[in-house]
Length: 233
Image 1 (cartoon, rainbow, N blue to C red):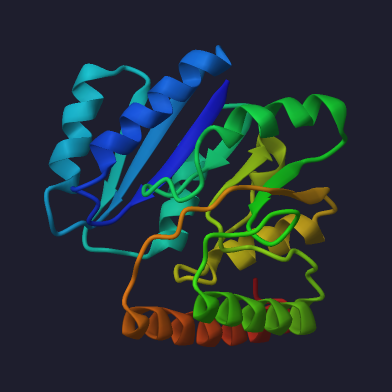
Image 2 (image 1 turned 60 degrees about the vertical axis):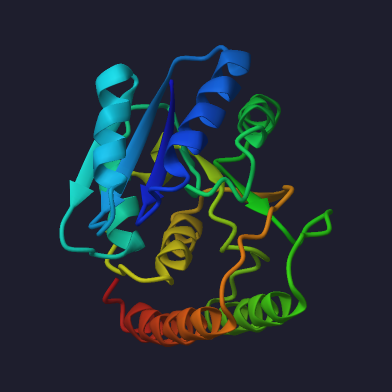
C-alpha cells in the first residue's frame, strides 16, 4: 500500500481540487492507497473541507492539531499514522504534480534505494523566480557545509520513502528545517537516498513572506546543527 501524506494549513481554496487530482492519479497507478490529510491548526475552513472529503471517501484519514504546531509536527504525526509500505509526502498546493508518484514508485523495484526525493535542481529547469533560486542555493551551501549533506533540494516538499526508512526517527524540529532533520537522520541510519527530477509549479508569494520564512529556516538550521553536534537529536 502507498500512503500519501499531505500537510495542510489554511488551504481552503485549493484542497478539494488537490484531492481530485490525487484520486485521478491513483486510478492510473492501480495500487492500494490511503490519503492522510493533516490540518495543522488552520484558521479558515480547511478542516471542515477535509472532514467533508473524509465522509465521502474511506481511503482518506484526517488528522488535526490546534493551535498550529508547525510542519515538522505534521510530518511526525503523519509518519506515525501511515500504514503503507511506501510513504509519500506531497504539498497541498500540488507544486510538484502527483503524476510523479507512479514513476518514483516503480523506480524502487529497479534500484536498492530507500528514499527518492523530487528535486527542482537535478536534470530539470524549475519554474522558479531568480531570488528564490538564490535563497535555495544559499541554504544548500549552508546545510552542506554544516552537515555534509549532498542533497541539492530538500525543500520541494515531494518524496517517497520506504516505510523502514522513516521508522523511529524521533523527530524534534517543528519548523521549516524539519525536512532537513528527516533526511539527515535517514542518511545517518545508512539508508540510500537519491534525487530524481520533477516539474515544479511555483506558487506566488510576497518577497517579504519569502525572506521571513528563509530567516526562520536559517536560524532553525543553526539550532539543528548545534543539537546534532551535541548528539541531542
